[in-house]
Every structure is written in structure tokens, then in C-alpha cells.
Amino acid sequence: MKYDLKRRKKICRQKYLRIRDAVPVDELRNKSAAIAGYLIKSALYADCAELFIYNSMRSEVITAGIISAALGSDKIIALPVTTPAGLSFVRITSTDGLLKSSFGVHEPSLNAEKIVRSGPRTLVVVPGVVFSRDGRRIGYGGGYYDKFLSENEYMAAVGLCIDAQLSGDVPAGVSDVRMDCIITESGVIVI
Image (cartoon, rainbow, N blue to C red):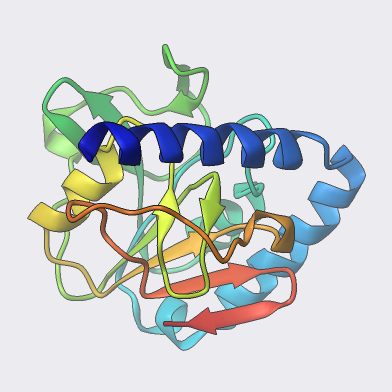
């Protein structure tokens, strides 16, 4: 049973990576700008004190605009750093000095003094390969975000994706944490 779920997730992940990777860069930029607009105008964003957000890579929804806008606010902005123990979110005040990780994403260096603990006003923006309208998600298979979300307090978990990444059939197990909201270029899907 567990093997079947793992296999189904792998097949789904491969399918949606191909779909996502086929989106032309200009189209992805336009859709990402619309997604950023919806997020920044949302009550969740307005109410958060800490924004935990991924720095996009490859064909992910581009988060640079969100990060830039948030850095100009009074919010605490933190990017994830992957460690053997899981994710740590490190505060940034600029995107200067980010280092390329083994995953190919630019992230801050792990500095214990800059690690931000999540709390009741933390908004966690979660990457993914495919999402469902009921909040299920498949990421890259490491389980980092599911582990973080299951072990930490936060206000909401928001998945960002383009409409082409939405599926009615997203296999999920008991350890998979559902999103509270998904934002696409078409708008906000509240779960």
C-alpha cells in the first residue's frame, strides 16, 4: 500500500513537472505576477507578521516580486534552508549574498542567530509540483515542508501554482499536510 502511494506520487510528480516545464518563460512571468498580486492583496498577507517564503527556481511560480514587496514592508521575511534535520527559516533583509544550494536554489547561509521561529502570525508560502482544489499537494518528494508544517505553529500554509498545476487526483498519505489556501493566476482558492 505504501509502495503504491509512493509510485502514484512519483508518476503524478513526473507528469506535472513536464506540464510546468513546458510553460513558456514569458507566460510564467505574467502568471506569476498575477499570483503575486493576489497574495499581496490577501488578508492572510496583510495579517501576517512573518512571511516564510521559498525563493523560486526553474519553472516554479516566480516569487521574486513577492519577496521584493515584502522586504519593503514591516514584516519579517525568511527563506528556507534545508538541513539534515529539516527546514530552518532564516531572516533576510535583502536578496544580496544568497548562496546557491545543492538543490540549485539561492538561499541564505544558515546562521543560528537569524533563524526565525514560526508563530500564530506566520504565513508559510509552500512550493509544489501539483495541487488539488481541496489542498492536497505533491512537492519534490523530500517531505521537508510536510515535516515543518506538522511540527510548527503557523497562521496559514499557502500553495502557489499556475492553473495547469491543479489536478483533481492528487494522491496523499496521512503525513501529507493540506494547504489552507492555493493561489493561481485565476485567483484564490480557500480550502
